[in-house]
Image (tube, rainbow, N blue to C red):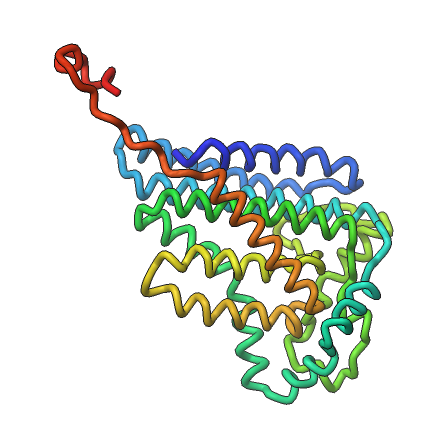
Length: 311
């Protein structure tokens, strides 16, 4: 089985998500959650089967890890919607001012990407690869027998999500596409780059968002950037796999760059996302530790002790 701390974090996030729903004032669309529960439950049942009945540790941990990833993601989505529903003042002007203090011109960067179609397509493809990368990392770590790395990655994923959701709820922003309203001629990314969240975002803040459908969730977070956090975590997780290290680094640097024009993020969102990821890595590394090696029993008493009772 995967480590107890990871299971406890997952249970805590599910409980927090359930508590958030009545506070946020929306209902759950049942079909999506029943499908999620059925899928995760089937994976956990198979993980038990391959742990107890037909032991295959790699397959069991992969199934369990994938199930926990699904549950963590769903719980985090509910919590992020509830955080935006709190309706605290928007901080776009603050984030824009921080960008200016760093010497970064968001509109100029958007123009830079728009004038280079190949660059724009690379950033778009990279940005939208995050989910596939996360699933791939879980499968790779699980099937290759890297249980500790898998536990740390999933724990860091959960911790970074909690940090991002908490900060974004306390200091929400609608994003630079709305704040700057750039010239339509610069809109060379995907059709709804950086604004696909607006319908849900505005309805939540207005108190008119009625039903949460897991199949139609949108990323509502601006600061810190969760895409950036995931990119940093993916690089960290892939670093221990020699053949994957440099491709993951190159791809995820493009993911981070793509969060600006395609994700609709301020530059400081990237800084915040990276900081959230580094905090999550520190927590996961401290929480998930290697199991202590079993010490063989010695002495005459040990020789006659049943193997199941020996230390």
